[in-house]
Image 1 (spheres, rainbow, N blue to C red):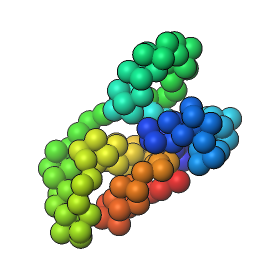
Image 2 (image 1 turned 180 degrees about the horizontal axis):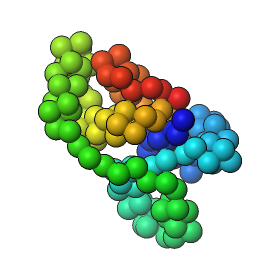
Image 3 (image 1 turned 135 degrees about the horizontal axis):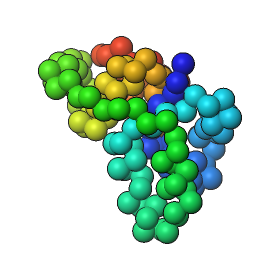
Length: 125
């Protein structure tokens, strides 16, 4: 099963953090995927830091197509709000929906995905 790696994991990895240690294994196993939202969150900072090789490598990762089901997204947000999970942003909801639609797990260090997993069918890595 592919694993959609969230921005939080990439940032930790680029900073040499300890929380993203599984990332290299996912790269070796070739089960790592990305989407345009995650790229849009990462690439501006990398461009400022002139990390062109890193940007090129990120573009070589299998990219999941984004097809947003706005009604499902709204329903997920309603479930989260009713369940007390406030503050989950639209980008995280879209990432979760993208993973679910493509039968992928989500690898994230963001607590929002822990909350989302209670109210949606996303699988966490």
